Length: 418
Image (cartoon, one colour):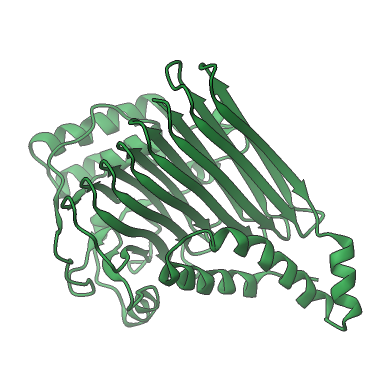
């Protein structure tokens, strides 16, 4: 596998000891044995990662460089002054560009690692782990400003780079937090971002988690988010994707204690030949939990989307309440949306439903706007924007809504609506 060809060189240049060394080796062994997924694999039926096999991506740590002046300008655009920003350039934490941590929040190098991997990309992330971090929010602590993990990637040294950030975030019992995981890159550059974000939410804690993927349109972004909810925990989650040539986000949510509630949302807007994949797994491990899932996307040009969602309600998860819906709006005859929602139920006292739609703009609504002398491109933009913003405004924090609206505006400016 091309992605593993630099492992030995990386290990020699950045040696690790103890648990991290063992974790790296385990990741390498797993990825080497498993290989990259193909479309013959059921979970990757709609998404090809052949681009990763055909190109060479060097770990950024092998040629670490400081950001150029032009890159610094772009990084600062990705920093929201209303947030607490923790900035990573090419996978490395940049203390100078980052905010001070609020009271009750700590960050240190991760000391303990999982003993198994979910797939090849999870293993690759482990194999090339440079400095994984543990972030902890103390119990009964409320952080007002959203905490924004800004991952910015750029080919300063000229070669296509690979970054593998890994964050484990533990939120204490009865704490309150808004966290944003943001991925950006220098426009026009080719790179591979492969991230893992583990979020553990304690009993009666309240968390808003938003993942923003606004990478370079030449990039590949593969990300995995694992979330587990404690007793009576409350979660608002949104996966927002408008960038990258190829992107895939795996969201694994486990409701492990009774009384937890979650709203799982997704927005994507693709154009040209972009491909976006959202794969979700909602695991009702216990009963008396509620999950509502809604993913909506628009596709222009020859853009493609894939949604592969699964709800698992286990045998003893009585009185579980779970719904799943994926809606797609095609703005071009060449666009394609593949959707596969599913529910697996092993309990008999549950409320569950799922569905998906793929369609075009309502002709009557479009005609109404045209009859009011609104140009066709603006009419299409208005209807499409309203279609997506419905999901955006389900996030309860105003500052995050404002930040995402800015990103959505930028995505719509790139669409060729006619």
